[in-house]
Amino acid sequence: MVRYLNGSAVLAWLAQAVTTAGLATIVWLVWRSEGRFPLKAATLAAAALMASPWASAADMAAIVIPAAFLVADQIRCGALRGEQTIMLGLVAASFAVILAGGRMPIGPFVNIALLSLILRRDRSWRKARVAFFSQPADPLLGRSWTHVTTFFRALLSA
Image 1 (spheres, rainbow, N blue to C red):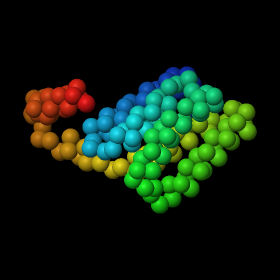
Image 2 (image 1 turned 120 degrees about the horizontal axis):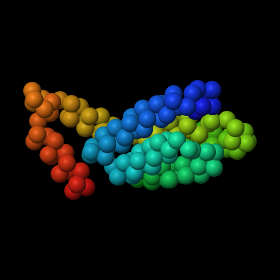
Image 3 (image 1 turned 30 degrees about the horizontal axis):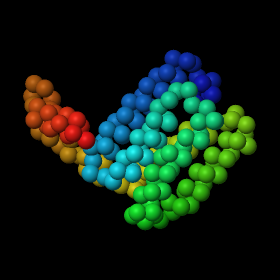
Image 4 (image 1 turned 90 degrees about the vertical axis):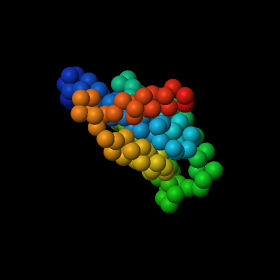
């Protein structure tokens, strides 16, 4: 996207690194939350699409993976207000990529909107973020060792 807007290569790689780090943090918070599995899988799939620096218009076909997990959760738990309309808009925007001949970078905006829609469905990841940052800090290490070891045990057992 940065290169499309005539930004330098260094700026594009810096923006990609910051975006990928932010996405990794989001995926980490969602996976350690008590949320439903289809939403966790949809978050991971959508973030993986956005983390790739070499995405093209043809890669928009892979957006059906996070959308399928989102729809599975909608079928099981019901759709939120406005979700179906937003999903229809995302499908229309995906077809706009084809009509534009792949020359307009619509894909990142579709991915961002889809990830926002996924994160809106389950807010338990926010509780995970608050729980982690509200732990008492060890003056030498910044976080208590018991919290860190509990996190890694939970990560390895999942």
